[in-house]
Structures are given as structure tokens and as C-alpha cells.
Image (cartoon, rainbow, N blue to C red; front, side):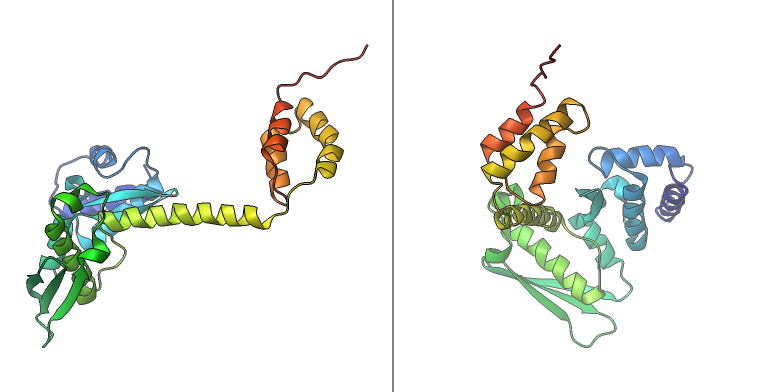
Length: 246
């Protein structure tokens, strides 16, 4: 456990009134409640810094981590959003106007003469494959409107709801796949003549242990595309025994 993680844990525990609790115990509990799978000190520190910034409790899942390419997306549950809204010094009340198509959130600030109004639309927000959106669509839309309005009213940044975190990671995965497909489409095919000319060299390198089939394939893929037959021929080299002539 790094010094940064210890400092962040101790500071957050003090602010939340978690006194006389060992830092190591808090960290171990946090790993099982706010993270999925293995977690690095860097990921732990990133979540704790955001939790400290907003005074959110990761041990009760007011904030938790959504994995994202070795980093995290800080996710705040609806109870966490409600806490930071109600805890803001300028918060002066909240109202909702809702029907089956939309929900408008209205937040009042003590230092403003006009309230902040944000409308979210069911057609834009509803997710057909998500359980809560099927069982409680109006409640979910109200949560969306509250979160978006609070961002404009109080400038909350760097935190997301669960829906947004899923969309972020799916979008990034789709972008990476599309990028790989686009690159493959732009590369020319590897001609049979060139393939046959280099095949003997690849065979010698693989059989001698200097290269693996995957390394040869990766090298070729930087400039050309390979057919399934060419890929299979290269991979077969790893299982082909070299005939030794006496």
C-alpha cells in the first residue's frame, strides 16, 4: 500500500467519522466494496482523491470504481449525488416536473435570482437492455435529470452515474475495434509470391526459437493483411518438426 493511498484513506476516514479503524482494514474492505477484481495503488488513489473531493463514502458505495483500460471511471450512485447536492452551501431546494416523455429538474441556489432548469427525455435516455430502465423508467429518468441539473447548477465534474460509465467503456471498446478494422481495411493483402519468398526464413526463425508465429504475424500485419490460409500456415510452423539430415 503506497503512502498516497494511506494518506487518502486516513483523511477520508477522519472526514467521515470513521475513527479508531486501522488503515489496512479500511483498504481491504474498500477493495471488496468499491472495486471489481484486482486493483492497483494508482486506481485506489484515483478513487480516493475523488471521494475526498466530494466527501463521498466508498465503503457504503456512494462512490465506486468502474474499470477502464487499467484506470477507473469514478461512479456515484444516486444516494451519493443526493448527498453532494444537499451538502452544497448554496443549495436552496429542488423540484421536478415529469410526464411519460420527459422530466425537468429545477434546482434553486441561494445566490441566484433564477433557478437552473434541465430537461431529460425518455427517448434519449432509456436503455432497452437495462433492468432498472424496464422496471422503473420514470424513476431512472428523474435521476438522470437531477444529475444533469446538478452539474450545471454546481459544476460537479469528474464523476459519473452507472449508465454513463458503461457507455464510456463500451464506446471506447467499440472505437478500438473500429480502428483496428479500419486499419486492416486500409492495408493491402500479402501476395502469394511474397509470402512464399519469406516463408522459409520465417520457418527457420520459428524452429530456432528466435521468433514465435504470433510475432511473425504481428510483424506482417503492420504492413499487410494475411488470408486465413496464410495465418494457418505460419502457425503450423510451431508444430512442424524440422527434419535433420545426417
